[in-house]
Amino acid sequence: MTWDGTGTAVSSTSYATIAEFKNWMRITSTDTTDDAIITDIIDAASRVIDNETRRTFYARTETHYYDVPDGDTLYIEDDDLLSITTLTNGDTTVLTTSDYYLLPNNASPKYALKTKSSSTNGWEGKSNGDDYQAITILGTWGYSASAPTDIKDACLMISSAYYHRFGENDSSETTITAGGVVITAKDIPASARAILDNYARLA
Image 1 (cartoon, rainbow, N blue to C red):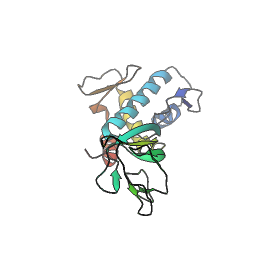
Image 2 (image 1 turned 90 degrees about the vertical axis):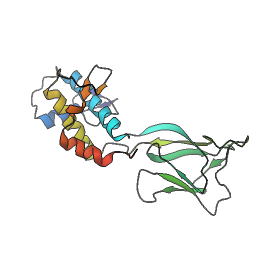
Image 3 (image 1 turned 120 degrees about the horizontal axis):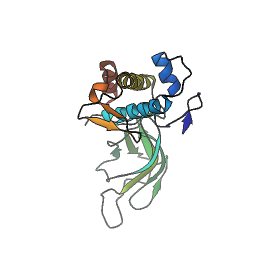
Image 4 (image 1 turned 180 degrees about the vertical axis):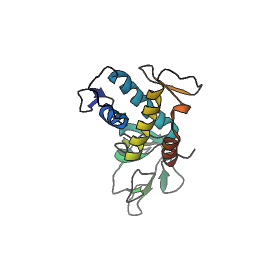
């Protein structure tokens, strides 16, 4: 958990804080009665953004598995890669940065790994000859370690749209948080939709 500056805990995977929401809504009252539901609304809006863009805007430490590629380049198509902790070949050889390049060179997130011509290590399958899910990447995943400004703005737009009509959800397309908040397609304003479309991962 992180803290939003008002003494209220907010999810570390949420793209805005209660303080930012209140500032966006120009709420000047110090009343904290609605803070719990606001927290759930912001979290739900953040998960809607994840679902709509098919990516996350916070850092996650995970292990992913990939098939051995035909050439020298392993493409990362299922997620956004920020950094690698450990890269292991199917034959259990651990590859280091002297063995591969992360692509693109000067931007993030990364979308591919290319073996260096100077390295004696290429992509290898398992000892039984199986290439399926043989490459293991333990790393940090996500589009970015924290939400870009326009993603934060989209979260606040969606949160405020829901807050204005709290309790009126009736669409069949919903996102439900553990707190019971339901956010539907009609809670995504056109301006927020335009932002999300810019970040959407291609199917």
